[in-house]
Image 1 (cartoon, rainbow, N blue to C red):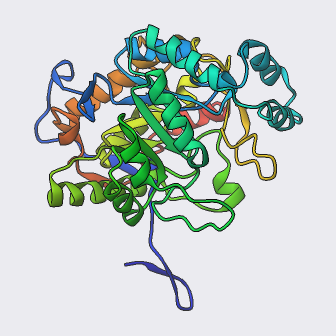
Image 2: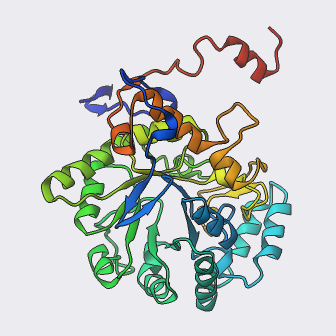
Image 3: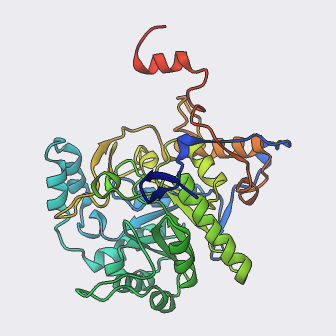
Length: 386
C-alpha cells in the first residue's frame, strides 16, 4: 500500500511520536502495581530504559549509577574513555569549544588511538560498581573488541553503526559475519541500527539477542540531513516488532527490540513501548544528568567522522541527577523528568499490567494531539501574551 508521489513512484506514510496517540483503556490499573521490567538473555532489568553509548552520556560513573537504579548503560569502546587515561581534560576541551570549531576539535580528539588496556580498565571500573556491564563498537572492530570485552568481564556486547544489515557488500574489507561473531561470543549480542522488517528478520536469524531500532532520530544525530535516510520511530518500531513476533511464533525464541533515539519526554518513551518496543535507548535525556560526562553538552558518535560528520554538538543543559530524571520528583511540566513515573502512569491509564500488554495498546494517528486546546501554552512558548 502507498500513495503516488509521482509517475510510477509510490511511497507509504510513516509516523513518528508526534503523529500518534495512545487510546486509554476500558480497564485501568494502579500505576504502583504495574510491572515495567524486561528481560534480555535471561537477565532481568527493573526499568526498560538504556543509556546510549555516547561519550556525552555514558562514562563509568553514570553506568554504575544506572545499574544501581535498575537500568542499563552502554559504554562506547571507541570513545574518549578508551582513548585517554584522563578523559576529564579532553571533555573540558569539547565543552569549552565555540560552536563554529566544535566539530573540528572533536574530530582531532577522536584521532587519538584506542588503547586496549583502557578498555580493560573501564570495564573493571563499571564491574566494581556492581551492575551489568554493556559495551559497544562499530562492526569493523567488533571481532577484536568483542573478545577483549569478554576477557575483561563485560556482560553484554553491542555492535552499532548508522545502518546495520546481516548482508553487507564490500571488496575493500571483509564484511562482519554476525553468525560467526555470535558463535565466537559467550556473552549476549545486541545489534543496531535497523528500521525495516526484512533487515530485522535477517539479523534475528543470525542469532543476535536484541536489536536497536532507529536510523537518525537522535537529538545530536544529523544522518537524516546529511544522508537523507531514516524511518520515523513509530513505524520503524512497529515494523521491527512484527519481525520479532513472526520469528517468535515460528521458533519460540523471543528477541527483544529496543527503540533507540528520538525520545525527549516520558510520552515519547510510552509511545515507543506501545508501538512494540521491549525497552528504549536514550541519549539526550541522560546527557542532562549531573553524572553524565558531557556537563550539559551532547554530541553524536558520528560527529568525529573525518570526511562526512553525521552528528553535532548540542547544548542540553543539566536538569538534575540521573535518579531525578528517572524517578522524579519533577519540577518541570515538560515531561523530561520522572520517565519511570510517566511509564507507570501511562500503563495504568491504558490498562496494561506489563510491557507486553502495553505493546497491544490501541494507537491512533493524531497530529493535533499536542496542540488541540493548547492555545495558551503555545502562546507562552512563543513568549506572546494572550
